[in-house]
Amino acid sequence: MQRTALPLLFLLLPLASQAMSGGSCRYTPLATPAQVIAATSSEVQLLTDSIGAITLERSHFSDVPEIGAHYQLRLQTLSEGACNPLQVIGITRLAPNE
Image 1 (spheres, rainbow, N blue to C red):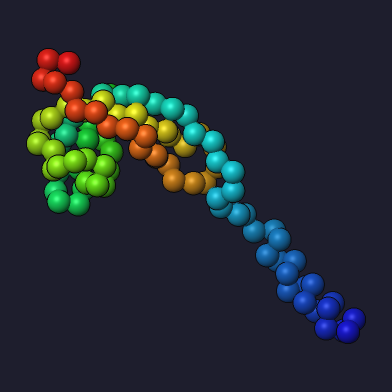
Image 2 (image 1 turned 90 degrees about the horizontal axis):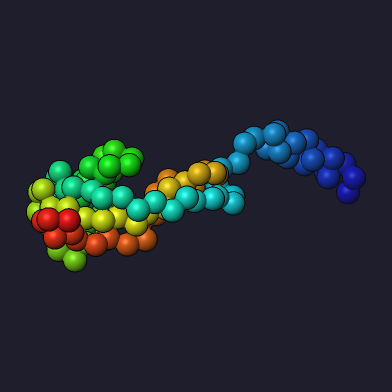
């Protein structure tokens, strides 16, 4: 038994030194206005005041947004770890004068 366990240990040692992705991640809340710059049936591209251009899945919107429409985005941006860099918390369409 000792003969089989020792070679297996040597096979696992190289794996222990490899960097792992994922794990515990921390996010920073962010509220930012954004304007739609492109939209398809599957994706919406927005230009934000805070983090530049982003692409979101169309499923975050009740209908396909019009180019030029303004929204208030409530997001969480990744500040630590190797997880999804952006989480959408809420999206509110703004009236033209807001």
